[in-house]
Amino acid sequence: MNRARATFRALRHRNYRLFFFGQLVSLIGTWMQSVAQAWLAYRLTGSAALLGVVAFSGQIPAFLFASWGGVVADRWPRRRILLATQVASMLLAGTLAGLTLSNRIEVPHLLVIAALLGVVNAFDIPARQAFVVEMVGREDLINAIALNSSIFNGARVVGPALAGVLVARFGEGWCFLLNATSYLAVLASLLAIDVPEAAGARPTGSTLSRIVEGFRYAAAARPVRALLLLLGVVSLTAMPFSVLMPIFADRILGGGAASLGLLMGASGVGALAGALVLASRRGIAGLGRFVALSAAGFGVCLVLFSLSRRLWLSVALQVPVGFFMISQMASSNTLIQSLVPDRVRGRVMALYTMMFMGMAPFGALLAGAAAERWGAPAT
View 1: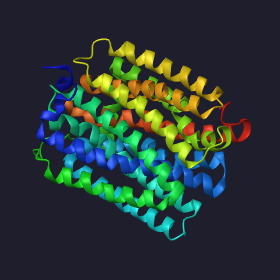
View 2 (view 1 turned 90 degrees about the vertical axis):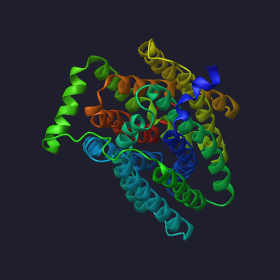
View 3 (view 1 turned 180 degrees about the vertical axis):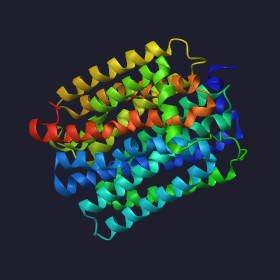
């Protein structure tokens, strides 16, 4: 098997192939909405603190409800869960588009829609992560996880760039509308996927006891515990850099929405490269050390980015920022999924969601407040 074929070997599975391309279209729309929403919040208020509040509203549900989402993912057919979450996300994007295009959008609307989308994600992400093994089996699980990261970050290259152009020329509402439309692709792929409805486990006992079982497993498994703790620390202290991107694009680098899209797109280029490097691996040997080195590299590159005052240099620095960020996140995901048994997979991936997305809102809130007081570079 040549290197290129090995890198994309999970695509030989029909179900995963459908999922891959449906997700790619949808995620481009998701990134367009993410950039447009941040710019809209900044345009409405000009406040760094409010950027943190909007991010907090969208991510805190992952901390509060991901454990319940993990129980649901281990109890009910995961494909059905994903169909429900994608429909809900499409309706929320459509609502945001309608409010923005009709010039009725206000900050409270942004906060409520962000929070509702966060609740949807708390159930979507554990099911999505656990669903991968049903499509490809354990043999190609590592490769499929890496390819999931590659489409996420490939979309992160295209989506922000498109959003920057659309926002500058037509306004944020068109980004939200296109995102709502993009969900049709992933819904079509999920409907075409053929997996046994009984593929997921059916645990017994109360919901609370199942949540506790997931926590106990993660606490007792030393490698899983270490990966989750590192992920939580990085999500709290480093991941909120993206919340401050509108400030850097506008006040620090003297650009606008197009510059914001360029910065986010550059980060996506680096992240895509990191995901493809991971996809080319054949096993998990040495991946733990790679996680630690990636976390350190992420921090160093963020410090260098904060010191830059030139757009071209800041864009260039976002490439290694994205590379190290996704290398740590995706490698942690790969190691955890390779280690956990199927019976607790949904609940452990819910803990991954809590550390990855659940700690980020606290970091976003702190970053917004710190940037308001000391400035974005110092933060």
